[in-house]
Length: 463
Image (cartoon, rainbow, N blue to C red):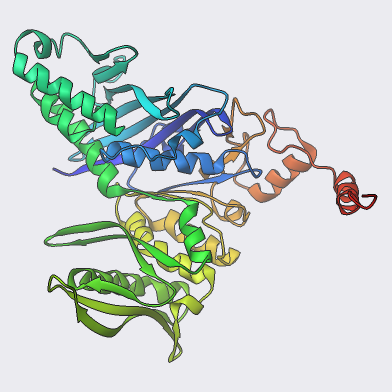
């Protein structure tokens, strides 16, 4: 089965400083959904205006779809003045190039009395885009969970035999739901619950949509949050984000190796490391001329259980000169750490990559060239935040989403942008002069800033 899954929209409520924000992807706005080409979406805006928040929630979404528990830090993302937060997503799912659907997923979180977070509502529904042209396409509920006082499952007529017909299955289902609640995992995408309600989903389409979203979350949704950059800047480790496919299957995920000192790994990890580096090197020398990455085997030893361990160090070679990777620039290390996933974005329609501060440490012209190549020849989806304005000069206006100063409406596109307009100039002019219905920047006063700097220095001189 050849199934393609694409992100179409994300709606966030009461997360950090975002009261409400709707991030519609370009393909969702114009209802093309997927035309065989890549889709790039850049987020721009003032510091603290909600760019990273979108990346954070993409990380939550990946854990939810993968059946993993919410991170313990989830409560730190929720608005401190609100009890509930929500995430809604729209996906385009295409099977065998003919069957086309939009899937709608909704998640509601609530703070508990013990300062934890509970999933109190989930819902998955869909529209069939293949229905007769002109006929109204209505959403059909696949499954929904509500947990206000007790857990209820919807639609009731679909799951009525869980209560009425089969006592043993009903008990097993309730146990699975209780385990999901305790572990803070999704009800819909929990492996245990899925096995219980799969018999009640007699519609093959519904089963296919759930499985497609599970696979997307595990294998094809990649989220690069800012904590990865911190480990690079502190010279601790390089977390490789990778996707490698072969005849025997695929390897994917995140794989950390030490930047300072050596890394001790087993033989299987050593072979994986060599494959990742071999894949990266095909592209690396075209991004940074003549640069190649090598894995240097320094020694081997055996653990107490008899497993062979190999001590390695990562080095770069350029113009015949080898340098330990820890001595390379932060920009080069960052490029290397995400390059395998960028390769997947370029080649795989279902691969979706979220990157926070993509521009950090990367030369602005090179950043523009990478994005231009990805947009012109790629197939997957790349969503990034950036402070560097170079991408505004190389990407279409439909591929740039701006944050506003309004917490009730955090994400907007600039209207009435012509192909001849320089989006960078339009954006800066809008910041300086206004003129947009949605305020993009909370004004700062240079004179007041200078006065504040002087005042701060003399604050305690009379003490």
